[in-house]
Image (cartoon, rainbow, N blue to C red; front, side, top):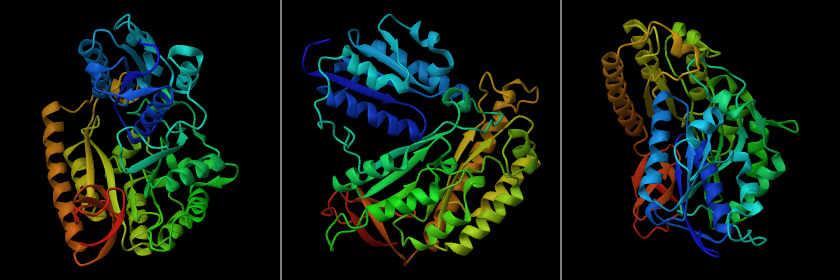
Length: 408
C-alpha cells in the first residue's frame, strides 16, 4: 500500500446496524488519510459481512471472492457477523484477506496498518457517500434465541451504549446539518443504560437537539430503525403520540408469522393475538402511524392454514410495507435441523403472494393519507421520503437534506 493517501472501498451486507457500522469504518479510514473509491481502484477493501441466513452467508463469501478478483493488489479486510461464526473460512479464501473483529477496527488502524493516524478532530461525522439519513447504533447483541437465527451467537449478549455518548453524537450530526437520525440496534427495544430505557433516551435526544437551528428551520427528527413487538412500552407509545413528528410516527415492527403455532416454534415471545392488540393500541394512540414489518414465509412445518393466518394478520395490521423473506436454513440453528422443511417451490409461491399483498397494502396506506400534510426528507433533487416512509416528488430546487412540507 502506498505511504500517505490511499484509496478504500467499503462493501456492506445485511441489516441497518451493519450499514451504520460500515459508515463508522468509512469515517475511520477517511481520518487515516483515505479517500473512497471503487473496488477496482482501491488499495484497501473492507467487507462487512452478514450471516443471518444460509443465503446471506453465500452472498458474503461471494462478496469476498469478488473483492479479491476485482483487484489483484488490494488488501481485503473481512469483518462482521460471519467472521464471528467462522473466521477461518474467510482467512482461507486468500492470502490478502485479514479477518478483523468489528470491535477491533479502530485499534487495527491505530496500530499502524495504514499510513497515518487520524488527526485530532479530523474525522467527519458524515458518511463518505453523502447520504442524508444517518444512523446511530445505540445497542448491540441480543438475549433472545429465535430458532431460525444465529445473530445472538455472532453478536453476543445485549449491550447498550452510554446515553451521554449517544446524545453527543446526535448533537454533532444535527449541528452538521443532518435532519433525520435513525436509531439502530440488533434488539433496539432492549436498550437499557444508566437507568434509561429507549423512551427515556428518545426524550433526551429530542430535548437536546430541539434548539440547535434557527427559528425558520425544522429541527432534526429521529426514526426508530426496528423494534420488537414485546419491547414497545406504553411510555414509548405515549412519547410517539406527543412528539409532533420529531419522533417519526413510523415503526418497523417485525411480525415474522401471523400463526401463533409458528411463532411459538420460532421461539418468538408473543402470539398473534398479542401482536394484534399492540397494533390496536398503536393505532388508537397514534392515528397517523405507519407500520412496516418483516415476515418469514416457509418456516419449517408452516402449513397453508398457517400462511393464511399470516396474510390475515397482515391485512388487519394494514402494513405500509412488508419485507418478505423466504425461510433460508442457517446451519447451527434448531430450525435448520427440522425434518419438515417446506419445499422451495411452495416457499417461492407464498413469497410471491405476500409481496403482492404488500404492494396492495402500501397503495391503500398511501391512499388513506391523501390530502394530509407531512414533513419529507429530500434525499436527492426532486425526491423525498415522508415521515410515514412514502416516497414523494418535491420541487427539484428543494435543498438535498432539508425537511420540506408536502401534501400527500
